[in-house]
Length: 67
Image (cartoon, rainbow, N blue to C red):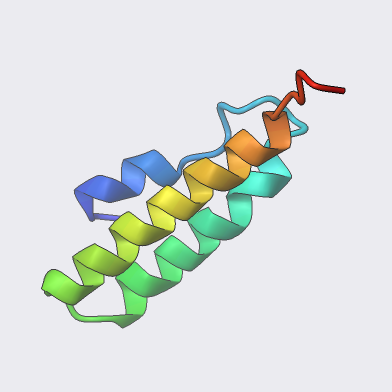
C-alpha cells in the first residue's frame, strides 16, 4: 500500500492472539486504497477505519478491573 497511513494497519508485529483482530482492518484498508480515488473522503475513511482498528485491539486486551 502506498498511502502513508497504511503503515498503521500493519498487524504482523502484534502478538499472535491480536493478529486476527487487526488483519481484517488491514485487508479493508488495502481494498479502500486500491479501489477508491485519492481524495479527502478516502483519507477520512482510512482515519476512521484506523480508529476502529485501534478500538478493536484495545477491546481484545481490555481487562475489567471490577471483575
